[in-house]
Amino acid sequence: MSYPFSDDIGTAGGTMEGRDGFKLVIAPDALTETTTITIDRFDAPDLDDVTEHSYLYEVRPMGLSLERTSSVYLPHTYTGDIGDLTVYGGQDPRDPDPGTGWHPTPQDLSEDPLIGGDIDILEYFIALVDE
Figure (cartoon, helix red, strand yellow):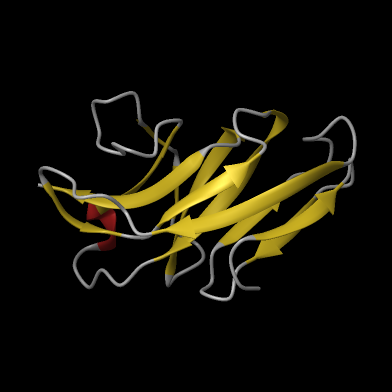
């Protein structure tokens, strides 16, 4: 789907996929009621000490806590060691730089060529290679 796009996800969970490969997987029982989830994509701002990065993805409703661990998978074009790439989540899209309140997500490399992370809250996500 093109950005932004929305879907209603219920207590059974579900998967949303963007045209570029971005994927959000909401686990069963992660939501307590049917919720409209919206995904949007932006160019990332200039980042200090970052050599490579993906687009910046916004997943709303912002700050919604999930009852069960779910996953995001981000497309990337990084050709180096995949272990150097980290998915970060955070609430402030103006500065998605490690050390500014953004946090790394537990990695999931099973969806190559996507890089994934486990999540428990809806927020902004970006994949970065730190120098």
